[in-house]
Amino acid sequence: MTGSERLEFTGATGAPLAARLELPGSRPRAYALFAHCFTCGKDAVAATRISRSLTEFGIAVLRFDFTGLGGSGGDFANTDFSSNIEDVVRAADHLRATRAAPTLLIGHSLGGAAVLAAAGQVPEVKAVATIAAPADPAHVVELLGPVSEEIQRRGEAEVSLAGRSFRIRRGFLDDIACQPQAERIAGLGAALLVLHSPADDIVGVDNARRIFEAARHPKSFVAVDGADHLLTRSDDADYVASLLAAWASRYVFERGTATGQPPAEGLVTVAETGDGPFAQRIVAGRHVLAADEPRPIGADTGPSPYDLLLAALGSCTSMTLRMYATRKRWPLERVSVALRHWRSHAKDCVHCETRTGMVEHIERVIRIEGELDAAQRQRLLEIADKCPVHRTLRSQVAVDTVEDS
Image: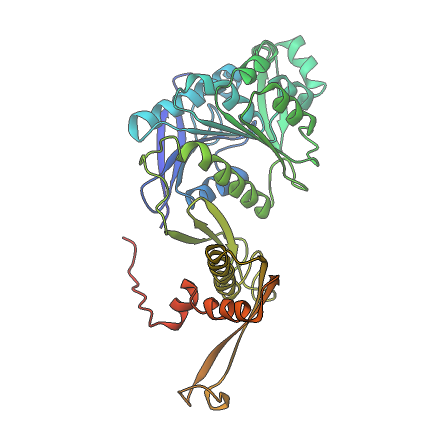
């Protein structure tokens, strides 16, 4: 079972910062740091859902409130972008001192700009991901609109953002105006993933292009089609988390994780996603799958458990035939397998030994393409019954169930 711990550490201005560490059910394979959007908090929908989803992949995630926001102390009016950067560095320092240094930095909106700027001060970082981030922190001035002129004229002003009031001072605007963000991105020294929605009406997708073009390889860009700026829909947040975990595994898991070990071979983990009553996320090594029940029982976000069972048998069958034909040097061009599962009453089954209860049926239709003679085709059909998954289904299987403590 995953867990969550409340933490506190000292921020850039000396004020205590409130944080939450989301932990996977077993020893973390990597630690990540999540920086939220401008004037948001660690408990915003996107920060919460993405952080908790990443724990299902073995990644522990620390999210925190910047100075003067959420549960953190200090006065927001006394902060600027430079202090935001320092808060990120302090959070990384706290992780390093108490757990393990973060190898992955994630930032949403202005938090994305902050992690790009802070990455160079966290030497252990192997990968950085931005979500709906501005290419330049000065983009905030556009959000302030005509109030920015009042701030410059009077020295400070009250600003209403996302239904909340904040006091912003001239020093904030002066600070973001002189940030060398393009140079930081060019010299990042870590793998970069840029996630952005083409429909984002707060921070336009052109910002993603500018970040991507400024960065050096390895770098990737993924469009989160249809998502809003704050990723308020749970399926968008879950999609981003899945992408992050799959992408980050190439960097933070292979090059030295918190355990120093790659994913255990043969280990499959399954956990609920919260996207509907039965939706599951499956992690098999470095691969991410989904499972669900079809509508109206479930949300149909993935194949059903029996569909996955048939997929296992079908893929094993095809692989087994391919390996056999290759070894025999037969001209097998292509194999395809169609499968179907159903139940019937035992009393209606002519070839079944038992006459009571229900009987499980799997129909497997194999299509074999290539210049093979009748004897070769018949032999391949016989070999199909020897695929390991087929033999497992036909053998006595003992399933030992214990509670994870």
